[in-house]
Amino acid sequence: MSKTLLDNNMKTQLKAYLERLTKPVELIANLDQSEKSVETLALINEIAELSDKVSVKQTHDDTVRIPSFLITNPGIDTGLRFAGIPLGHEFTSLVLALLQAGGHPSKEEQSLQDTIRHLEGKFHFETYYSLSCHNCPDVVQALNLMAILNPNITHTAIDGGLFQHEVTERNIMGVPAVFLNGQEFSQGRMTLAEIVNKVDTNAEKRVADEINQREPYEVLVVGSGPAGVSSAVYSARKGIRTGLIGERFGGQVLDTVDIENYISVPKTEGAKLAQAFRSHVNDYNIDVIENQSIVKLIPADREGGLHQLQTASGAILKSRSIIIATGARWRNMNVPGEQEYRTRGVTYCPHCDGPLFKGKKVAVIGGGNSGAEAAIDLAGIVEHVTLLEFLPEMKADAVLQEKLRSLDNVDVIVNAQTLEVAGDGTKLTNLKYKNRVDESEHELALSGIFVQIGLLPNTQWLDGTVERNRMGEIVIDSKNETNIKGIFAAGDCSTVPYKQIIIATGEGAKASLSAFDYLIRTKLA
Image 1: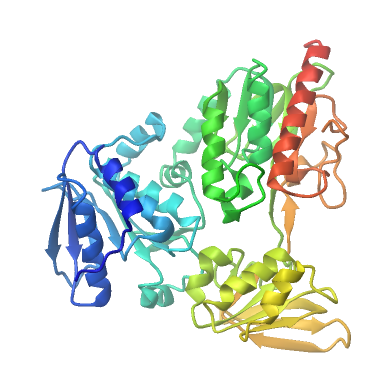
Image 2 (image 1 turned 135 degrees about the vertical axis):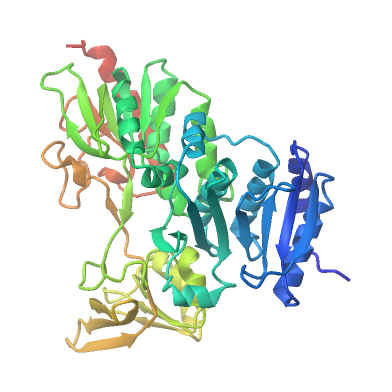
């Protein structure tokens, strides 16, 4: 009896999607007699049974990864290949690849697709992913689309858990890890536009020129996380010219796996909530500018004047009012060796990178809820976890601490001050910490360190402008106003207490209403 990898619900959904195919798709599997090859063949056969436009062919080539399969059209090599079995978070990537290879159009901006079609040169991309990584699909799907659009581009998505020897040989300690023509290209989440900008040297200037042509806004929101999205929607509903600019749509929500405290939504995932945010924004006349970071705020020289924002690409945007909702980023340990071994053992996402440390010893820095949850998750994958907490006791919820202490392969050390991260030049090998009670120093032999010590506001670009506290948070009043007229702030980048998604969305709405009130009471200079 053949093995079944797709349940009935998945088959029903996939069958409905495959009805959108407008041209035949051929799955060419490179296999041997191994168990994983048998599973790969079972998966693609199940897919082929759901549509008369999908066919399967088997081959054996020792120069190509086994097991793997090419998604292409008969007689055409798209260069789009999966090495491994793309289930888990990558199942969506598989479905999209099937649809796009079968002629279903992408929803990406047409101008960006045209840029990809005209890229010159040979680009062979390889992406290492883990099935539990919620950041990986964005990169895999972007590169898959590039391979479909341009015959000079190929892409192989590789399950790092299945091809462990390659992960070791290439010193990969974080996913998604992308190689271009055999050389390191990037690590971590990237959007399609960011990838294109990196390979197309003229793209940034073209984008800056296009941005410079935009007319001034009445409300310009900086940051496309929960607070920013809420601000933009509330502003657009007032019928005023609204802009929304951000580096990645969804912000920190994209780094959140399970969300169970967003009222009216009993349980969801960060990526799904971000998609819902995007869908809501698309319902309104909001000028969305993606993949752009702001490096400078230039306040208006008089009340009622136009504030200006400068992007990293050199473009200038103007607006009567600005709402800053740039969120926060992971806090660093700020010890010697941390930056040197970042992505080479020092990581910040246990869900993404945990599988790469299977059977190894790791440490978790931080005894709050995120640290405890990380240690619990890692305990099921790695050989041993040591959790280090700076304070005399952990701050995590009691239920998490109880679960943590029930695990045989987890040690908790409190009053531990991290001193240094060390390695052999290519990868992390140990961590040094101090016992804050007796001042004794200790060393742990490790392969990985997962940093879970909270967040820092993304406000470093505001030096010399709006008032911030010692933590870098923007100081706001009860109406989200800053010390500069016409400039407001909302969410995790501000002094509002309790950094939660639902609080950020409420603060975004409040900032928008305050900005509208400012506009109707202030005459344009």
